[in-house]
Image (tube, rainbow, N blue to C red; front, side):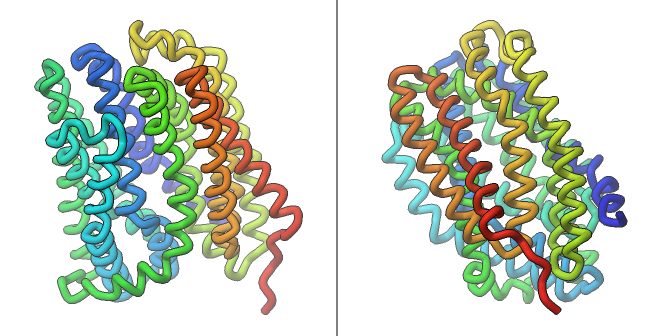
Length: 414
């Protein structure tokens, strides 16, 4: 299939970007645990989690809806410029309205708002990251143009951290280095976009309409992603920062393994969005191809993670994190479950116009996950949060399969 060739050409660059997203924590977590101490690292981990939760609001799911829109405007430079301008304005509007709510929430969550200066650095880095235009390069089949830049900037940030962080009082440097890296990526990337599309300040319009049109995708994105970051926050309230530090360390390893296959899913999405419009049979064939090959790789990854949990924790997180071994063994199912949910849900149901149903599934599963975390973490600490995470992902998979059995995706008439 022509679509599979396009996907495979995009995969190497996306592997570099996605792999780095999880490689950086693996490079820095053992160092931060040792230099900052487990309690201070737990506070930093809470702020990382809170920042990622804020990113869900600040991005508004536009990396999904804008990718769909841009994939349908290939070759239309002015149309792409208008879209980039609308996306940028929409994110600025969301930031203006959302930042007061984010700061208010930070003050209400235990251990998140205690260090105001650290919170400000964390949110500043998140604000800049929200404007990462990777979606544009992905939709226009130019992921290779952004991959090298992103890798260089973020590795430079790691170097700064390793050289300058010397104790608990230097925790702010972690977030400052991330801020500098994302700022560099955004400025240079928008320079590329301006040269390709003629983007100008006059294109900063249409943001409110874009927010309205993308509300269902945002609700889906928030429902599918926010609970990943709410679980550590709930765990922090129930069990304290030390348990959060252990859980986040193990979860980073599990999600790093899952992320190795994310480039396939990211490259698949624009192709599936186009094919489901006028080539249903080819889209179904592409989904089967992905389930067999990408799903098989995910199953193998989960098995390796289960069997190698103890040495991985010792090697990558350090001896201080040895209690995270059992947590990682439980979370070893994440690569398989996340991959299957991404293929069946995001790749199939969203392009088929089932975003509202998928949103409802993720929200219901997310509340189930939080409830289970509250019930289990009080007795089992971080292990209970791991069990809640796996049961939540499993409930999404079961619900998607039941929904598609009852309401299968049919070829569009005409």
